[in-house]
Length: 372
Image (cartoon, rainbow, N blue to C red; front, top):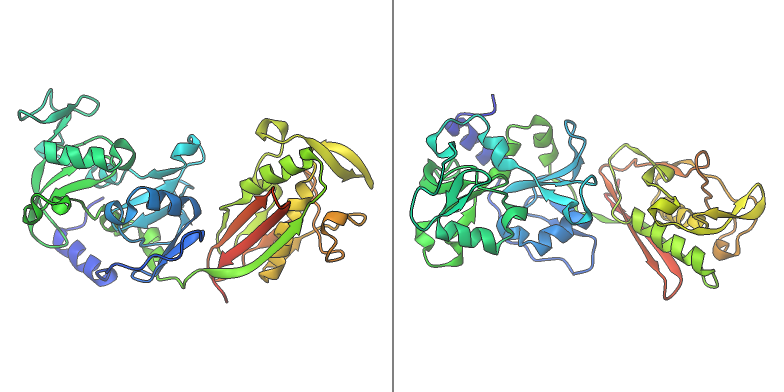
């Protein structure tokens, strides 16, 4: 069954999750943000999405780190009021998507409010023909002002009164695909009169694997970094370096996983790469993606400086001026068999921050995670 008795669920939630208080934001520009209130961080694309979409109000604090959902294979992260997932199969604007917590938690409910209607039940309500439900002006204004379909989805119920499992009080609520809106009359006339319900907490308690991810994690720190230069490179090489670097920015490697450079993506013309020079059979030759080894070498050096276990690394067959400030400390890659691989042997996931500064002709990789 998908449901837990209200009293039991309320008691379990009160034991597992401690009430939270506001935290001070970390300096802008970092690829992560740590919340000591729950002991979890948001990183890269999820951090960007959270901060751009009023995440503290609409999603609340993070309850887990990012992790791979064993059922869907998607990277997900639970928050107090919902869950987000990374969707590389969708257009770039929807790479970070709010999960359908409302649909998940109301699956199978037979309450009259979930029955589709032929039109609005009350005068002045806005009717959504897509799902057959209507929304009152107060809820509708909140919906429109805070992300609409992106953050809430369509309504999947009418408004009705429901006992809040966290407070035991009765509230006017309405379920949407991704959220539950609640009306708080004690805040009537203020921004707080409509709030999002704690669907993330309620969903989490029914997911044993996710529940295991709630253990507080230490604050993310810098494990290792490296920078290489490519001054005097031809334009094609500069282009390929920038294109490849952006593909690695935001990579998350789970604890215990082996990471393959070549498995990260497609380094072909179809994916934006052009012909440049590379070492093939001990000689310089034009190949698609020439310059890729600048990126793999910088990545390798950052991983090495982080103290991670390197499981495959091949040096170039002769000296390359671009990154021989440390003699022999390089990593060549060539599809399909010459790869750079390492294992994340830290106590948690690691996060890769990569940036190509084309003005100063440098590439920087930073590895963030948890120290042993």
